Length: 173
Image (cartoon, rainbow, N blue to C red; front, side):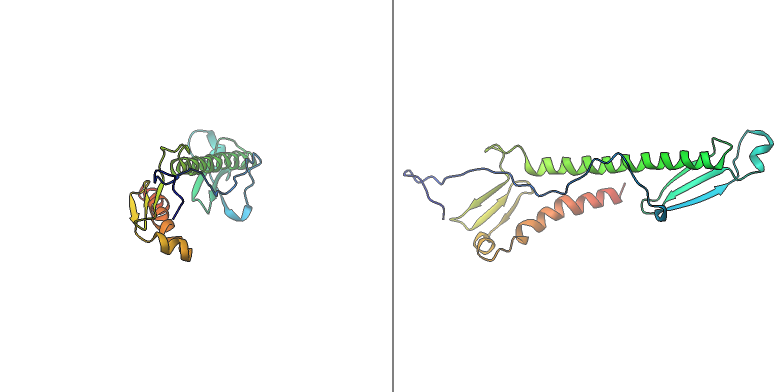
C-alpha cells in the first residue's frame, strides 16, 4: 500500500508512457514489382483508327491492397504505364497517411493530455481494484496483476476496444 500523508490521504501522481512504432516520412515511395499486376488492353472512346489497333491502355493492380488504376490518356503504352504507376503511388501514399492519422488519433485519445484531472486508470489498493476510465472497466485483481505481472488483464480489454473494434469498422465500410 502506498504511503499516506499525516491526514491519511494517499499520494497520487500522473505520467504518460507511450510505446509506438516509428513511421518514417519517406517521399521516395517504392513499389515492389512483384506486388503489381500490369495488363495492357485497347483504348476505348474517341481517338480515330489508332484507338482500336494498338494495346496502349494500361491497368495496374496493386495486389496487396487491391487498388486498381487504369490509364489510356496517351498513345504510348510506356507513357500510360508511367502515369498509372504515379497515380497508384499517390493513392497508396494517401492510404498510408490516412492510416497514420488514424493511429495518432487513437494514440491521442488513449493518452490524453497528462494533467491530473485527465483520469485514465485508478488503482484502489484497499479494495484490490483497478478502474480503467477510458473503457469503463473494473478489475478486482490488483494484487494478482502486481504480484504475478499478469498485465493481460488490463491490456486485453483495451486491445479489444481499440484494435478489434477499429478492424470491424473498417471491414464493415
